[in-house]
Length: 111
Picture 1 (cartoon, one colour):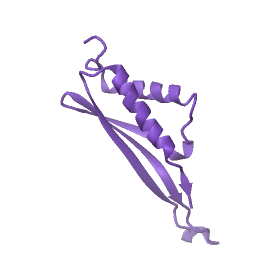
Picture 2 (cartoon, one colour; picture 1 turned 60 degrees about the horizontal axis):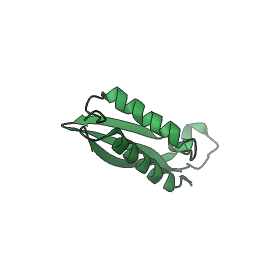
Picture 3 (cartoon, rainbow, N blue to C red; picture 1 turned 135 degrees about the vertical axis):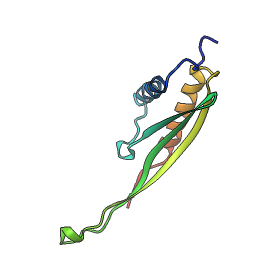
Picture 4 (cartoon, one colour; picture 1 turned 90 degrees about the vertical axis):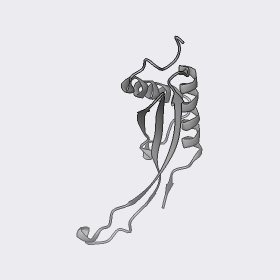
């Protein structure tokens, strides 16, 4: 099939993901505090893709002595999906958009 993703390299899949994300963000931006990152792994006959982001941060209480200051605690979330190499770029695009929709539906919390 000419439109399948079997000929794409890991770098091309990552570039495709970033392109879909950039296009999606024209209408609905992703909160930059979430620090979204994508992890692409090649498995036999498929691409496994993980979106990982910060869903919340618990702020450490501020103390007068900087040496005693604790670090903030970050809470992460992730979203997994896989796409067969025989599937189309449209299928890959739909999965990426679904992941972005899920990420945007979860509010960033700061305590």
